[in-house]
Length: 118
Image 1 (cartoon, rainbow, N blue to C red):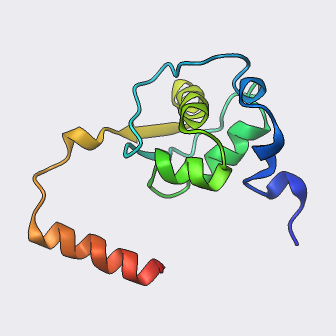
Image 2 (cartoon, rainbow, N blue to C red):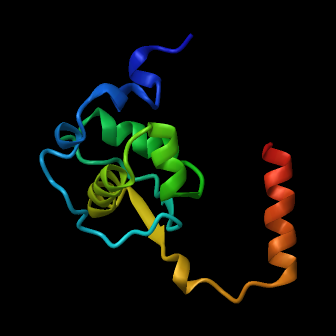
């Protein structure tokens, strides 16, 4: 059994406005399908435990929606946490609208990836 601080959903009982320090809008433009990934840089010390949980979930490319699901937090809360991490250089993002044309090969690769995860 993992320690409470290591569990990604530890913050689920905390009110969203506490997690975001009362902020209601992220500073970075993020979509639910925006891909985020940690850069390996250490986040600033002033960031809280929710930021650390978020950063751990970004060790490999993942979407904002996936991070929100794992944290069990509203998407806007996760977008604010990710914006903070982007601001420190700890996380990088890729805009989903800047992706290449969708091809049959891409769709097949996504389906195969989903099958192996499920």
